[in-house]
Length: 108
Image 1 (cartoon, rainbow, N blue to C red):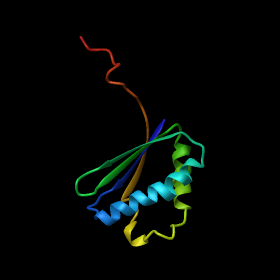
Image 2: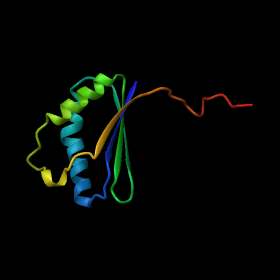
Image 3: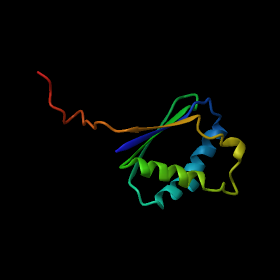
Image 4: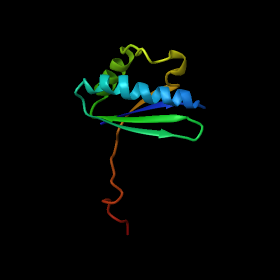
């Protein structure tokens, strides 16, 4: 398994957040779904609009394929590029462990 962390440092305006939500729902997620890879996405947001997206995939190649698919999409007619500055940074990591805290043995 591999993880991708995508950082949008903010602050972000309500218009930027709405544009990001629209882009994700209407353009980005459909493009990534077409790849046929298994992904899990976690979206986090601070009060100032800073966001971190954590994407988990079975392989690093799946994450790279996702990046390529996203970057090859064209903006939709309703999208304003001024409201979509892109991420501040993207980092990839191999997943070393997955621990279900509720299932982990209690220490003595």
